[in-house]
Figure (cartoon, rainbow, N blue to C red):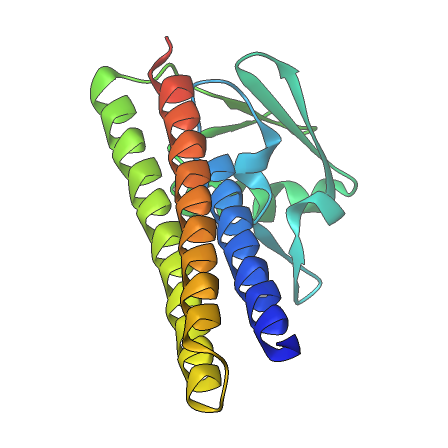
Length: 186
């Protein structure tokens, strides 16, 4: 029985990771509002080493549509600008010799629909992660039944696992629906 509790705890942990991954991926989708999260995974060459952008510059939102990147060393303006251009985030940096300004353009209807598709795709990937956790846990439960766990107990745990999966799928659907609404709001 202790083994089954461990299996359920591991399944829940994997499902939590799927939700965390989804939220991380959805943060990267820009919604027409300036957010420093679109720059969070960018790496800049700093003295020959790839370094996170936020470790070589101050990144902040100055207004609803503008992100300001102020490097701590002026010689980093060029490398930061190149990284932003090469990142394909759809924003052209404006370098004034002191700071880099990123003006987030208003989203077109077509781009909004593309972003919604991307959000739904990320949601589906998270659901696959939840289902994989269920599949793995079901394998452990079936093995436990073969090794002497009562079949009734095995079925009860399987039903409990399915309820857990359903709750996580509902969470994912709610998170994606909220992001879709955020994207489609003009």
